[in-house]
Length: 135
Image 1 (tube, rainbow, N blue to C red):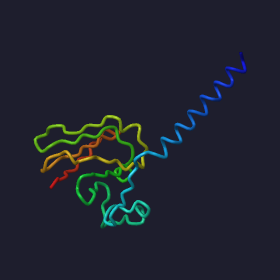
Image 2: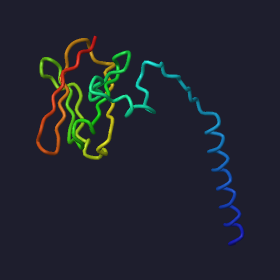
Image 3: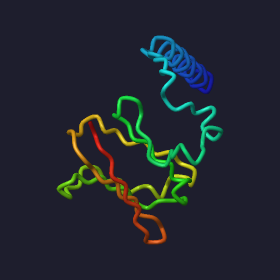
């Protein structure tokens, strides 16, 4: 009886390994090359100067907003994105899990044109506000 159980177990392990291997090899992964005007993450720290403020940075199309927590002073508690009418559009209350050197990404693709305000709440009860414009 033990032999049958062991053989069955080995057979199931082999099937799982074969199934995972086939799934990995047939997945639809598309690699998209990034244009040279995007952020060069390999040289990100080398490009930081007083002239280039990377604290709040949008990509070339303006559909992604990158926020550098480290340059803002470290850990954040909460992020709120408000419209010019003060309506909350995006809210994330789980920033406390992120490391100090996080570069946070906000997807702006579904937002209408206009002005918005990003509010970051720190652990020191400080609010960092930044106005962004979606064209």
